[in-house]
Length: 459
Image (cartoon, rainbow, N blue to C red; front, side, top):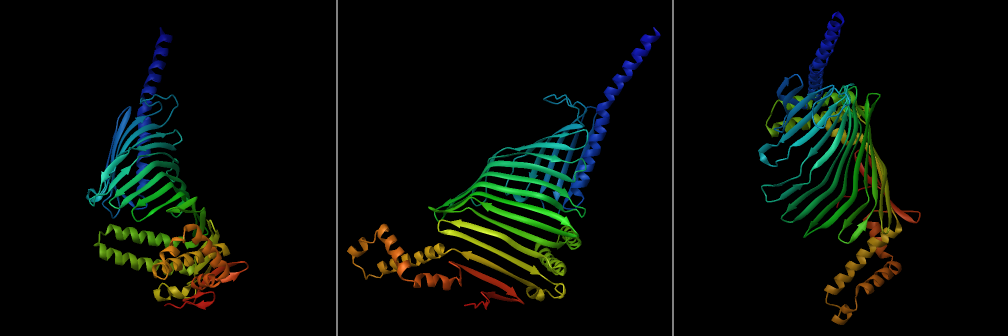
């Protein structure tokens, strides 16, 4: 009988422990919720205007409203939190976790300009504190005040976050965004967003981010154009008290009517941005937003602070360099590079913004193949033929003979036998010979813009 009592006591003790586990996990979930709120609002860009956490035994609920500082934009999140270690939600999973959260977020925009559908999410907080969220936004249609129609095909994606909420990575994608206005349709097809970022010691987001659109199409009475495979990617690092960033722009093809060109790419590097100065400027901007000034006054204050920022940054001579530029056409490849430095180390740029132009120096060049110059000259030949037809100097029989094939032959012959056409293009673009091709070199020195070492004459 005594042994039976001991066994019963142990069973009751284990049952009590098992029953208390969800409550303990609920306490941990609330701690994680508070830590997440603290991290989101630490930089001052987001403020909490409403927060209500109700902790139960097996589940908790949270109702939180965020406001983007200095704007009327709000985000309201309603969360149902199932406590671990084995949340009793659907579908039931047997892997122990800290909590599982079902969320619905609503975005409030001012003036009812655009009503966005809610975002639903399912987040799993693992025992180590890290989490993974799967989010989804339904498609929606809406109309604007000027009669345009906006159709959004929805959004899906995943986001992984570390236990301290200081690093995250994710991928989001949307099938399409279609804007139909009176003068035509603009569509963005297969939109993608990706990021893998961490908080630097100074609080800036560093790491990688990218944005892509598989097809961007503009179809109107005045313009039929598009870009395929557009992608913008960035990498940001903090080292030695500086922020350094690299931006990459790429596209597979660009179209204008029946004309197709590409691919193209450009790489831009921004180096030696002083972190201490940026931290100070960030705080000043946040303080200005909190003051709720009239827009005109706020804009003037921001302009003044921005000029001060440039002056302070100039002390470390930051650089902007286009390390690679390439654009392939049917008539050849256009390449280029450039580098500019804002060197205010010997000038009081912060005290006198007029010295900014003097502190800025650099050089850039663009190279054009001879075949592209010939193509541009061909446009001049065809223009002269059109003017000749319109002048009345040709008979109807002569005009009838100017078929597209005949015009192409005349154009090719004129470019070959009349060098003035190519010379006109070279002169107009201020090009200089570069082997069998051409180039243009522009430089900025002591506030003066030079083209091929000659001062630019403004006409």
